[in-house]
Amino acid sequence: MFSERSGSGSGDQNWLRSFMFTVFGTSVLVVSYFPLFYTHLGFSSSQVGYLYSLGPLISILSNLFWSMISDRLGTIKKIMVILLAGQLVLALLLARATEFSSVMIILSLFYFFYYPVFPLADTMAIKTATRYGRNFITIRVFGSLGYAFFALTVGYLLRAVGSSWSMAVCIAIVIAALLITIPLKDAKRDPAALKSKPEKSHKGDKGSGLKEILLQKEVLSFFGIVFLLALGHRMNEAFLTISLKQLGAGEEIIGWALLASALSEIPVFFLLSKYGERFKELPLLVFASLMYALRFLLMSYAHAPLAMVAIQAMHSVTFGVFYVTSVRYITRMIPDHLRATGMALFTIVWSSASGLLSGAFGGIIYENAGRSTFYMVAALFSILAFGGFLVKYLLSSNTKVAPEASLKKQAVQAQDSQPPGTTPAENSTL
Image 1 (tube, one colour):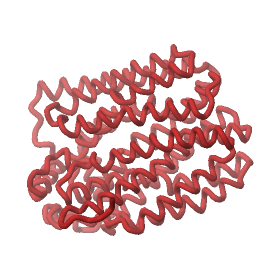
Image 2 (cartoon, helix red, strand yellow):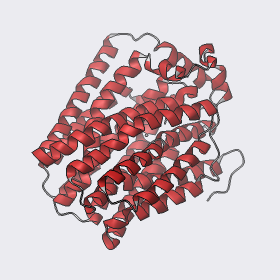
Image 3 (spheres, one colour):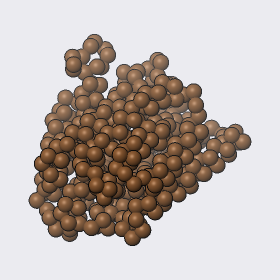
Image 4 (cartoon, one colour):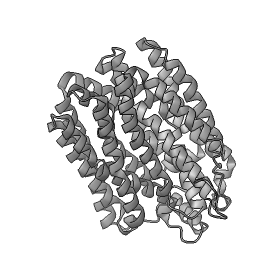
């Protein structure tokens, strides 16, 4: 399976696929089963919400910290090893913690090492796919497959042994991911992209890359709308398992719900990677936002576990469309030498900042207003994002946008040096 064909880089890609498959198993535990683990310890819905929001708060710093180090040192693999080793040590400590205060402290440190893994893994997938003239989806889709696999198997496993074993399963998956990093080939800087890097970026000013990205109005407006959409997405993510539990679902039903969402996005990933270039990004983002609103509206009226499982299949036309299109949009604006920092900013908006608010306030809404109102609020955020993307699209249609400033020019220069047959979408990445 892992034999390398001459010049094809199949070995590099297959090891990276295996890594993506495994590391997304930790996402299943942290996002979906940690809340059940903490309710098993006797924590209230508000406390679980605070724990969920604490991680995103920490990750705002950690994503920027580790991604900027990665861009500065020109290595992803070494940073990944440090992050996974940190996760392993802290997961061992979490397994022994039972008091809310101690869990809060240790989990904060755990999140410092947990969140940056995913934007860095996506960046590695982009660079590896570009190196061999492939589409990054052929690598990234294995993360979805891994999420689906672990969502189902972990659900049945914890159904048999109990939610108290959640942390032990997490430790085992982190160890496996850490071992797979050994044969991974590092994603080095692209020499051609470095030649196109503007002179001012060689000055070594701290945070110059970050300023270079944030000074673009196109990027800022996009991130602002993404934040609104992310609020609803993260609310559902944080309280889906708790909602299912309240309706009487067992761990295996929860596993099927996670499986439905993970598997549904895979065909959309492939379709958009093949045909997505035929469509402009903003209309696709308008569509995804509208589908998010419909999804959460249906969730607010669902009163049976199987109905909620079925609704999770809408993950395909919500997150599936949104993710691939957003990554394509970001890659078009942000050049290679700032790719890790750009993806970190996207992760901060999509996961960290939104998770901070959705966890804290979402827990309060859920506990005091109930599940139906909770999902109505999530739908409202999606409608606001729908309006934002629609206005952005209408303005761009009526106005010829000037060359999208320096970042787009740099990205075009970098793309000109890519292998023959590589499209802008193939240079894209969560």
